[in-house]
Image (cartoon, rainbow, N blue to C red; front, side, top):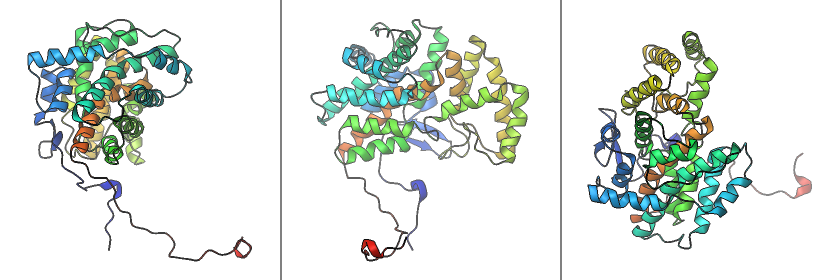
Length: 375
């Protein structure tokens, strides 16, 4: 009998050197480094270098890497014109997905899949995605885009392009750490999508476009949006306990809790929660902390289910002032590093991804003439 693994649960399909999860410690590691240590001690640009090159950069390597990234931040007027034409109520993930395809059409070497060519395209997308997100946000709010600056870090520059100013260093650090936490997560749905697409020898832009489509879903990247919508619907901490108990009693899914891989808690959550609480003090968001504390305690005590990264990130981004539909594009801004690292790894030792399926439809039958078919 053929055994079916729904959702490929428990199936190992390939090898990777990019990241892994130490199941015993529930620790996510990038190239051997615990992600919480990277978030505390490194800026996101260093983590991007690590994912693509296998080692953390030296001072000189980081300086060269940052200079190259900052030179690629600007987007063309043609792309800005395309962004202007989008419906103002289109989801930002859809506009971002289309913008990546547009960038692909502007690249005369779109099919260059040599290691150096892939790295250049990966860096180009990493540099331009924040500019696209910020420009799209401002245009849909009737504002003109703010050009990127080359004297700011990636996190600082994004804030400046989005809001027109850079917030306190503690807020920037919190945002930067969230990018590190979101950068990579092994063979998740969007990463596997990207690897599957390029396994046919399609181009890197197609792989990233497909990954964005996968990440958009509420069960993947869209979960951070769903968390904030939930908190807003509950409204206050005094209503959180009754709401949570009702969800548990009705066996409803509560977004922001549980994970396909982590069974004893997500190692990214403790430090992200610490950052979330600090941002709440900085930005007068204690109501969200009180609410999530109640929800967390009940879920852990009653069901033994721990929060995942989206649970603290959702309210953190909301307090920073980002529109809720922009939460998942910010995820893309980070995960572009992991996706492209996997695309490069896939193409370095490629085999077409082509699983089998178990057929459960009709047995073989003959085609009847039209006049003899039953109504």
